[in-house]
Amino acid sequence: MDRLSADYSALREVVARLDSRDVIRCANPGDRVELGTQFVRCGQATVGVENLDRGRNTARVAIIAYGFRDTQTTRLDVSQKFVTACHWVNGLATGTTFDIPDLLASAPNLNDTDVRLLLGLFERAYLVRRLEVSVDVGRIDAV
Image (cartoon, rainbow, N blue to C red):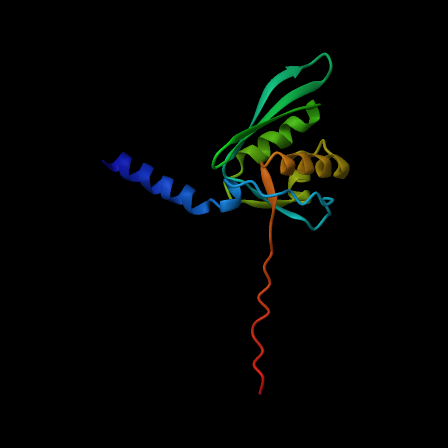
């Protein structure tokens, strides 16, 4: 009973971190990834490295995004230097925010251009989404 209670508690925590954008596909903004852009790890997606080709120094990466009514699999053939970054993003908890410097620190073999490219690919595959910052400007009452 204790284990079931702990599992149920963990499940509630995961569900609480889900965002509707994790299960309903919104159009990707297609904007350039700028230095200040923050990303959120989507909750209904995973990354797997399917194949390493050491001779060509490439890896096939599969990103599976589970939606409300559909599942989308994106396969990418990338340089092996991207594998560490793929594992790092995959290991983030749902709802974790990060930015370019965070990803650069996790994969020091990548440069700024590499990270921007990878984040754009991850965004199109629904592994990450941009953090939407809402601004509460308050209310100004007329006197």
